[in-house]
Image (tube, rainbow, N blue to C red; front, side, top):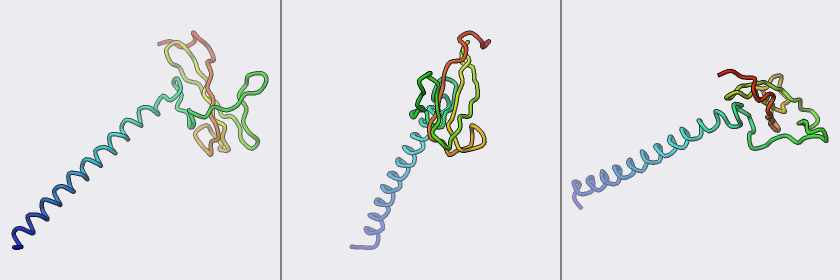
Length: 114
């Protein structure tokens, strides 16, 4: 095999590998771009740490945290409704973890102005 034929094969292989790399990076970037907007409003207008793991409730229907965790609550508006958003956390604020579960409920149906 002459050097010209070998280097041509190598260039073809490297070019093929480069296309696969670009495709893979593009797919990863696309998946990341799709994932981010879904998290922006993962339950009503809240951005909960664990939107798929809501806390348990007591016999009165109130969300409760396991021992060692406390509920940190904030409010947000979506349309005309005010929602309460909560995190069971060991942290000092609703944005500080570690988190074990999340909560959300409607506070008032017609309290936000658009």
